[in-house]
Image (cartoon, rainbow, N blue to C red; front, side, top):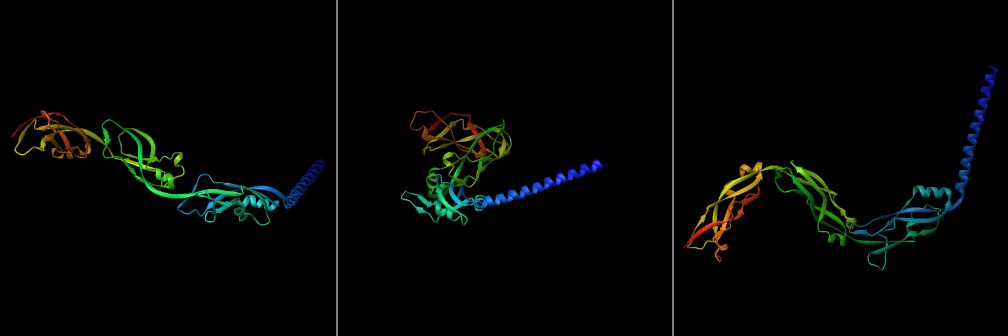
Length: 320
């Protein structure tokens, strides 16, 4: 029992000694840190450059200096504060000087940094000492979007109407020389197979290395189209003669031709014989010894996707 009490007392005393040691160690470290931070040091601070007040009709060209290094001398406290709380300098593009080179401007790095360095910090050296940059004319225009879709339909299906790109025009902005050269913007290349439903998908706009300086009003467009089943139809269409001289009569053999066409199922019953016009043109044979006409389909409904005239040659008999 007595042994146990002695052991517990010894452990308590030992623990207190450790705690006291830790407290003195922490206090000593804090005092040492304050003493060190009160000393004067020379060090290099890296600061990011932010270009501000760029007018809407101007654009920065090429590569600009994005960082500036300043060798400074100050106390440890101020050095830490500068490094952690003020790491960016602003270059006001409305207050820059022009060089003799076209579109090239500059600002002294010292002047820019002085506004962003805390008091009582001595600047020994700035690198680079001068910031050079180019300003060009910013231009905006609208250009058409061209899709690069390859469509393969399931058998018996086709487009009901044309594929639409929405929007069909976008705005591009950037250096005048680049904008002037660009006439169209292309979408990504994509292949769709076995299509049997309506098309509604997003396409990313392409931007190669030469176009990286441009800004697009949007990064993607939509491709939209109605897809329908299609079928084949056949109609007999009466032939008409065009440019027949006065005083002449003509007989055609045959008097009508068959037209085979494809159309969407939903439009099949709307298509009639009156929607087609086929001519035989007398001017095609009057100065030749041809004994037949080649019929020409000059009118057919928009719903017709493909067509063929079954009779390729029309014989005729002409009388005065």
